[in-house]
Length: 108
Image (cartoon, rainbow, N blue to C red; front, side, top):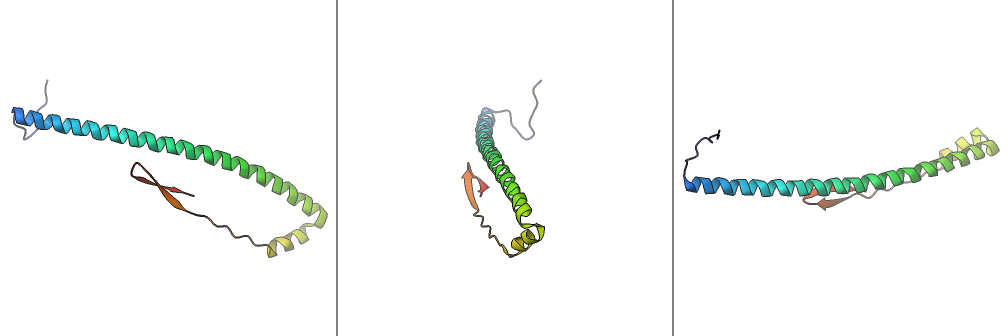
């Protein structure tokens, strides 16, 4: 059973208009699928980079913690506390944006 659209005349011109609208909607749907696929692909790359960076950070922290324990054994807790109070470290982060199919994606 066919459904009727409100305010649509049953003429050939209206049929052609509706066919054009359906074609346009299909193209838009295809474009949105492509955009989604590109964003998911980029997201997977970011996840892989994150996992690698996290693994490197955990390894570095494990080494640093071991070195801190050795220094604490050699110097004592009080001296380590004094050294850590006078030591400073500046952290600089650079932010940018990357455009993926019209979507602005932040990157570090």
